[in-house]
Length: 93
Image 1 (tube, rainbow, N blue to C red):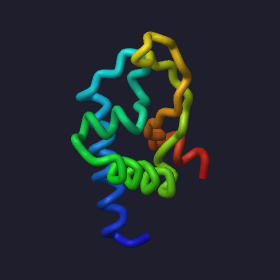
Image 2: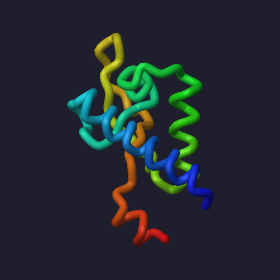
Image 3: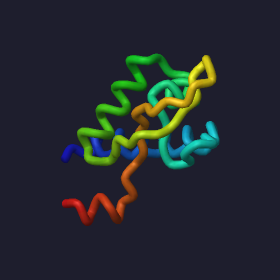
Image 4: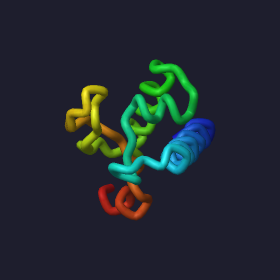
């Protein structure tokens, strides 16, 4: 793998971890939705999607289902994303 790609993926992982810590999600501390990631990092929707796709292609991202409360106060299940810990990633390969 190209060194610049590795650096980019490492930087994205760091940004993702920082976003989770910054947002302090109550429902699930280890995962965040695309909208939560976007808001936390102050990035556009396309940039957030690009970041998630890059991490997913690199095998660094897991898609999970989490509960979130909608504006109408209804609880709903939505897709969220979390980084795969290095030990799990190594085991999966």
